[in-house]
Length: 81
Image (cartoon, rainbow, N blue to C red; front, side, top):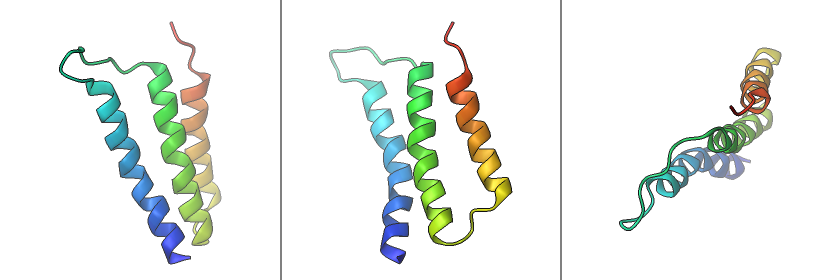
């Protein structure tokens, strides 16, 4: 079970790194802005491994679940202008 927690923990910085690589573009392109779709992707990609780690280690409390659900609700409830 420690291996699963380790893999889930390593996926969080990997999301940031791949997201940065995607947004910076390459030399022939300009950098991309951060839009709501990218924020939604990032929130979802980070919150699921964190919930998995907490649940596997019996540390997922009601308060932690409420905070994670609130962040996901805000990211997905925000209407793009």
